[in-house]
Amino acid sequence: MAKTPKSVINELLVEVFNQILSIEQQNLKERGVKLSMNEVHVLEAIQKENEPTMSKIARRLRITVGTLTTAINRLVTKGYCERFSNDGDRRKVFIRLTAKALEVLRVHEQFHEEMIDAVIEDLHLDENHVLIESLENLTDYFKSKY
Image (cartoon, rainbow, N blue to C red; front, side, top):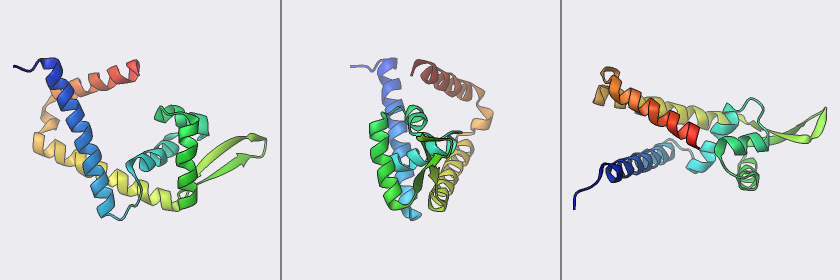
């Protein structure tokens, strides 16, 4: 039975996603990072958030505040982040990264740079405007839909 374009696209997207996560996890492990990819992505979300409150971080990650609380508790215990309050409003709890977290994020960013450099070089993506435009459209679609 021939595969439909829809099933092929599904298989390719799932495979690319899983490959990147697997390679990323292995790379971080080889570089001495002892965190799960979920934990690294929580640190990344904290770093990207202008006002890193629990609700804003959870929204960015598309998870519940309860799920985020569990992750933050682990990261605080491991020394990667800490909670603090603003003197003006003690009800609002912020999350800040420690130097230990910033080092993990530096390693994580380095992996992404190396991966993209290799993809551009191996696939000549700098010359393939159709693929780049398609990936941009796919990203825009997912952002608008989800």
